[in-house]
Image 1 (tube, protein in one colour):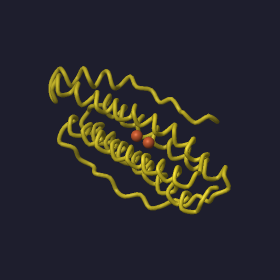
Image 2 (cartoon, helix red, strand yellow; image 1 turned 30 degrees about the vertical axis):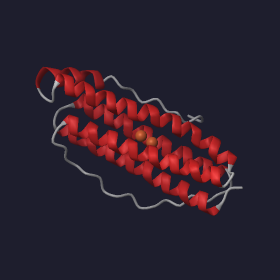
Image 3 (tube, rainbow, N blue to C red; image 1 turned 180 degrees about the vertical axis):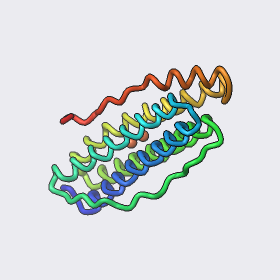
Length: 170
Ligand SMILES: [Fe+2]
Ligand SMILES: [Fe+2]
């Protein structure tokens, strides 16, 4: 059974995913303005991924006969003191998103909504990767530094990231 409470909670998660996209695109814009085009690229790819997360949930609600209600998305921060700070913020944000999915999973289990529970498993697994990739970059910056050659090398590396959609129909 697909309850109204479950639909409401999933709509809230669509909002969280769109906010994630907004936050990462804002980070991308910030680093583009700092001439760190590789870091800007990494965050831009990340923002696109967050959009696919939003649409995965969107499609799921509709497929099960629920109604999607788009909620207001807050304005994200637009300045970061350093690349390290931005990736630390990204990591904290992903931890918050992991907690959101843990709560959604609890709700699906309480409601014995197995279809939603199985659907959410993909996101629970995805969050392991999301936290790991942000954390890995924070550690790299700590080792190589926030300035100079180390940052230029990291910028070059992050410039290689390419967006691959996880949406089945694309
Ligand atoms: Fe996401
Ligand atoms: Fe994410």
